[in-house]
Length: 204
Image (cartoon, rainbow, N blue to C red; front, side, top):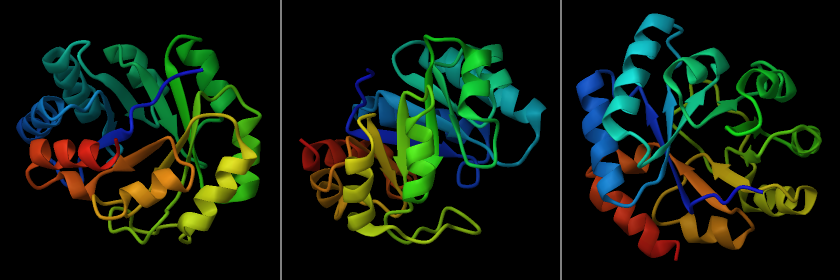
Protein backbone atom coordinates (compact mmCIF):
# COMPACT_ATOMS: atom_id res chain seq x y z
CA UNK A 1 0.00 0.00 0.00
CA UNK A 2 1.30 3.45 -0.87
CA UNK A 3 1.97 6.14 1.71
CA UNK A 4 0.37 9.47 0.88
CA UNK A 5 1.75 12.72 2.27
CA UNK A 6 -0.75 14.78 4.25
CA UNK A 7 -0.77 17.47 1.54
CA UNK A 8 -1.55 16.61 -2.08
CA UNK A 9 -0.75 19.70 -4.12
CA UNK A 10 -2.45 20.41 -7.45
CA UNK A 11 -1.14 22.74 -10.15
CA UNK A 12 -4.21 23.66 -12.19
CA UNK A 13 -3.56 25.45 -15.47
CA UNK A 14 -6.88 27.27 -15.08
CA UNK A 15 -5.00 29.38 -12.49
CA UNK A 16 -1.41 28.91 -13.72
CA UNK A 17 -1.59 29.29 -17.48
CA UNK A 18 2.08 29.70 -18.43
CA UNK A 19 4.90 27.22 -18.01
CA UNK A 20 6.90 29.84 -16.11
CA UNK A 21 4.06 30.28 -13.59
CA UNK A 22 3.77 26.53 -13.15
CA UNK A 23 7.51 26.07 -12.57
CA UNK A 24 7.65 28.94 -10.06
CA UNK A 25 4.61 27.48 -8.24
CA UNK A 26 6.13 23.98 -8.19
CA UNK A 27 9.47 25.33 -6.94
CA UNK A 28 7.82 27.21 -4.11
CA UNK A 29 5.72 24.20 -3.10
CA UNK A 30 8.75 21.91 -3.11
CA UNK A 31 10.60 24.41 -0.93
CA UNK A 32 7.60 24.34 1.42
CA UNK A 33 7.79 20.55 1.78
CA UNK A 34 5.43 19.32 -0.97
CA UNK A 35 6.38 15.86 -2.25
CA UNK A 36 3.28 15.08 -4.34
CA UNK A 37 2.04 17.33 -7.15
CA UNK A 38 -0.68 16.76 -9.71
CA UNK A 39 -0.54 18.54 -13.06
CA UNK A 40 -4.15 19.32 -14.02
CA UNK A 41 -4.92 20.72 -17.46
CA UNK A 42 -8.49 20.50 -18.71
CA UNK A 43 -7.88 22.44 -21.94
CA UNK A 44 -7.64 19.29 -24.05
CA UNK A 45 -4.57 20.59 -25.90
CA UNK A 46 -2.30 17.54 -25.77
CA UNK A 47 0.71 19.32 -27.29
CA UNK A 48 0.66 22.07 -24.65
CA UNK A 49 0.09 19.51 -21.90
CA UNK A 50 3.04 17.46 -23.10
CA UNK A 51 5.35 20.48 -23.24
CA UNK A 52 4.35 21.81 -19.83
CA UNK A 53 4.50 18.40 -18.18
CA UNK A 54 7.91 17.73 -19.69
CA UNK A 55 9.21 21.03 -18.27
CA UNK A 56 7.85 20.20 -14.82
CA UNK A 57 9.53 16.80 -14.86
CA UNK A 58 12.82 18.23 -16.10
CA UNK A 59 12.67 20.97 -13.48
CA UNK A 60 11.71 18.88 -10.44
CA UNK A 61 13.38 15.59 -11.33
CA UNK A 62 12.58 12.94 -8.74
CA UNK A 63 12.31 15.33 -5.77
CA UNK A 64 8.51 15.47 -6.15
CA UNK A 65 6.23 12.66 -7.35
CA UNK A 66 4.31 14.06 -10.31
CA UNK A 67 0.79 12.85 -11.10
CA UNK A 68 -0.86 13.43 -14.49
CA UNK A 69 -4.55 14.24 -14.43
CA UNK A 70 -6.60 12.08 -16.85
CA UNK A 71 -3.97 11.21 -19.45
CA UNK A 72 -2.22 7.85 -19.02
CA UNK A 73 -0.48 8.25 -22.40
CA UNK A 74 1.10 11.58 -21.41
CA UNK A 75 2.09 10.17 -18.02
CA UNK A 76 4.20 7.58 -19.82
CA UNK A 77 5.53 10.06 -22.37
CA UNK A 78 6.98 12.35 -19.70
CA UNK A 79 7.73 9.65 -17.10
CA UNK A 80 5.42 10.96 -14.38
CA UNK A 81 4.93 8.93 -11.21
CA UNK A 82 1.22 8.29 -11.66
CA UNK A 83 -2.20 9.15 -13.11
CA UNK A 84 -5.40 10.45 -11.55
CA UNK A 85 -8.67 9.76 -13.35
CA UNK A 86 -12.23 10.98 -12.92
CA UNK A 87 -15.55 9.28 -13.45
CA UNK A 88 -15.70 10.23 -17.14
CA UNK A 89 -12.17 9.10 -18.01
CA UNK A 90 -10.73 5.69 -18.88
CA UNK A 91 -11.57 3.03 -16.31
CA UNK A 92 -8.97 2.55 -13.56
CA UNK A 93 -8.18 -0.98 -14.71
CA UNK A 94 -7.70 0.20 -18.31
CA UNK A 95 -5.32 2.87 -17.05
CA UNK A 96 -3.47 0.30 -14.92
CA UNK A 97 -2.96 -1.76 -18.06
CA UNK A 98 -1.28 1.25 -19.67
CA UNK A 99 0.87 2.55 -16.82
CA UNK A 100 1.88 -0.76 -15.25
CA UNK A 101 2.10 -1.76 -11.58
CA UNK A 102 4.72 0.70 -10.30
CA UNK A 103 3.11 4.06 -11.02
CA UNK A 104 0.41 5.37 -8.70
CA UNK A 105 -3.21 5.37 -9.81
CA UNK A 106 -5.89 7.49 -8.18
CA UNK A 107 -9.64 7.74 -8.84
CA UNK A 108 -12.07 10.57 -8.09
CA UNK A 109 -15.37 9.60 -6.47
CA UNK A 110 -18.33 11.71 -5.40
CA UNK A 111 -20.63 9.30 -3.56
CA UNK A 112 -20.68 5.96 -1.76
CA UNK A 113 -21.53 3.94 -4.86
CA UNK A 114 -18.65 5.33 -6.90
CA UNK A 115 -16.28 4.88 -3.98
CA UNK A 116 -17.21 1.23 -3.52
CA UNK A 117 -16.70 0.66 -7.23
CA UNK A 118 -13.28 2.34 -7.12
CA UNK A 119 -12.37 0.26 -4.08
CA UNK A 120 -12.74 -2.89 -6.18
CA UNK A 121 -10.27 -1.67 -8.81
CA UNK A 122 -6.47 -1.68 -8.84
CA UNK A 123 -6.39 2.03 -7.84
CA UNK A 124 -3.73 2.85 -5.24
CA UNK A 125 -5.86 5.57 -3.65
CA UNK A 126 -9.36 7.00 -3.94
CA UNK A 127 -10.40 10.64 -3.70
CA UNK A 128 -13.72 11.81 -2.25
CA UNK A 129 -15.25 15.22 -2.77
CA UNK A 130 -16.06 17.96 -3.01
CA UNK A 131 -15.91 18.09 0.78
CA UNK A 132 -16.78 21.79 0.84
CA UNK A 133 -17.99 24.13 -1.89
CA UNK A 134 -15.26 24.79 -4.45
CA UNK A 135 -14.50 27.40 -7.08
CA UNK A 136 -12.04 25.31 -9.08
CA UNK A 137 -14.67 23.38 -11.07
CA UNK A 138 -17.24 24.75 -13.50
CA UNK A 139 -19.89 22.19 -12.61
CA UNK A 140 -18.97 20.69 -9.24
CA UNK A 141 -20.65 17.60 -7.85
CA UNK A 142 -22.80 17.95 -4.72
CA UNK A 143 -20.84 18.70 -1.55
CA UNK A 144 -20.29 15.58 0.59
CA UNK A 145 -19.19 17.36 3.78
CA UNK A 146 -17.21 15.85 6.64
CA UNK A 147 -19.88 13.18 6.99
CA UNK A 148 -19.11 12.07 3.44
CA UNK A 149 -15.43 11.72 4.37
CA UNK A 150 -16.35 9.63 7.44
CA UNK A 151 -18.57 7.42 5.31
CA UNK A 152 -15.85 7.05 2.68
CA UNK A 153 -13.38 6.00 5.37
CA UNK A 154 -15.73 3.18 6.39
CA UNK A 155 -16.09 1.97 2.81
CA UNK A 156 -12.46 1.59 1.78
CA UNK A 157 -9.14 0.47 3.21
CA UNK A 158 -7.30 2.25 0.40
CA UNK A 159 -5.58 5.55 1.18
CA UNK A 160 -8.21 8.31 1.06
CA UNK A 161 -7.70 11.78 -0.42
CA UNK A 162 -10.25 14.49 0.35
CA UNK A 163 -10.69 17.31 -2.15
CA UNK A 164 -12.85 20.38 -2.65
CA UNK A 165 -12.76 23.69 -0.83
CA UNK A 166 -10.08 22.56 1.62
CA UNK A 167 -8.12 25.36 3.30
CA UNK A 168 -5.66 25.75 6.14
CA UNK A 169 -8.65 26.65 8.33
CA UNK A 170 -10.58 23.41 7.77
CA UNK A 171 -7.90 20.86 6.76
CA UNK A 172 -7.41 19.40 10.25
CA UNK A 173 -11.12 18.59 10.53
CA UNK A 174 -10.92 16.68 7.23
CA UNK A 175 -8.02 14.54 8.47
CA UNK A 176 -9.88 13.96 11.75
CA UNK A 177 -12.88 12.74 9.71
CA UNK A 178 -10.71 9.99 8.23
CA UNK A 179 -8.85 11.33 5.19
CA UNK A 180 -5.19 10.37 4.83
CA UNK A 181 -4.42 13.38 2.67
CA UNK A 182 -5.99 16.65 1.54
CA UNK A 183 -5.81 17.79 -2.08
CA UNK A 184 -5.55 21.55 -2.45
CA UNK A 185 -5.63 23.97 -5.38
CA UNK A 186 -6.87 27.46 -4.46
CA UNK A 187 -5.40 27.84 -0.96
CA UNK A 188 -1.88 27.25 -2.29
CA UNK A 189 -1.96 29.88 -5.04
CA UNK A 190 -1.02 32.92 -2.96
CA UNK A 191 2.43 32.56 -1.39
CA UNK A 192 2.65 28.81 -2.19
CA UNK A 193 5.74 28.08 -0.09
CA UNK A 194 4.32 29.78 3.01
CA UNK A 195 0.92 28.18 2.42
CA UNK A 196 2.40 24.67 2.07
CA UNK A 197 4.46 25.12 5.25
CA UNK A 198 1.35 26.24 7.13
CA UNK A 199 -0.63 23.25 5.83
CA UNK A 200 2.04 20.88 7.12
CA UNK A 201 2.03 22.61 10.51
CA UNK A 202 -1.74 22.26 10.73
CA UNK A 203 -1.71 18.63 9.54
CA UNK A 204 0.99 17.22 11.82
